[in-house]
Image (tube, rainbow, N blue to C red; front, side):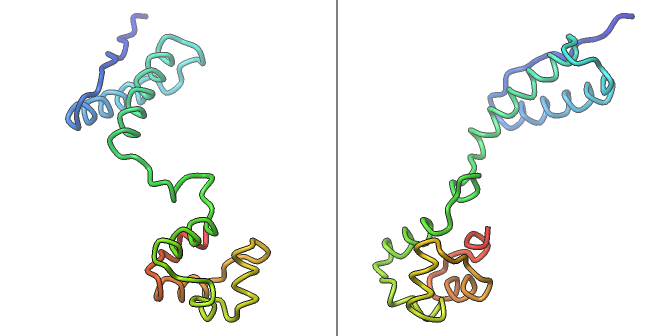
Length: 130
């Protein structure tokens, strides 16, 4: 049985990206059950890596979406950049001791805290609740 191999292509722009995705998708549909380590599988993996590399460069992931994102560090940075002290946002936490507990990682953010911080500072609440 003769198998047509996937033409592995470099990606230089969005049009190339679109073509590469379409080609990989079509090839994967035809070779969904190929054996691990087969030439077909190697072709799919190679093109997928090229696509992934282009996507990372073209649409970089914001640091706040990464796996090691720290909400407390994010908030501390936002406070520092805006020149706001802990005591100025203590009401967002309910009290100064609770504010200190959260910023010292002894307590987590609650939905109510995140909403108040969002209203006061413009900090995205969903980032604090991750």
